Amino acid sequence: MPAPGPVEQVAADDRSALKALLAGVGQDDAGESGLDEISSPAFLLVDGGVAVAAAGYLSWPRSVAHLCVLVAPHHRRRGLARVVASAAVSHALDAGLLPQWRARPYPSRRVAAALGFRELGAQLSVRM
Image 1 (cartoon, rainbow, N blue to C red):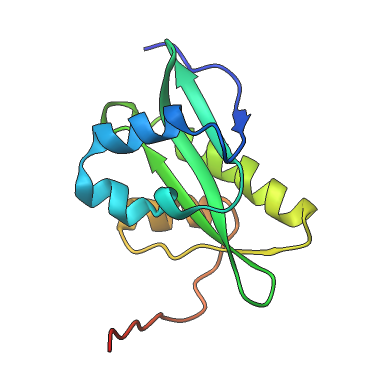
Image 2 (cartoon, rainbow, N blue to C red):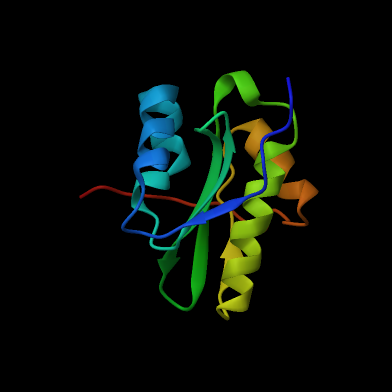
């Protein structure tokens, strides 16, 4: 399978390719990625006119950039998550933000570690 083209930065008002990727991966993967809530541009890898990997971040309080990453199932294990996540991290750093990655599934944790993220704690969410 050939490699997708270069990372494309897509503005917030032009997210049709990102929405198509989210629709094609299933509700669980789309929800875990968090990409439907990003406040940054989306960073996409496109193959044959179709987005196969995407990353971005949601701006959190205290200048934190919460990373969101997704790769289409049939394109996984090719290093694409690292490519798009690296673009999103660079963008966050250039904006003076502190990137953080909530990596729950093992593959996500592996990508985060490959980019230099370290596990520093746990997150607890409570719905009242």
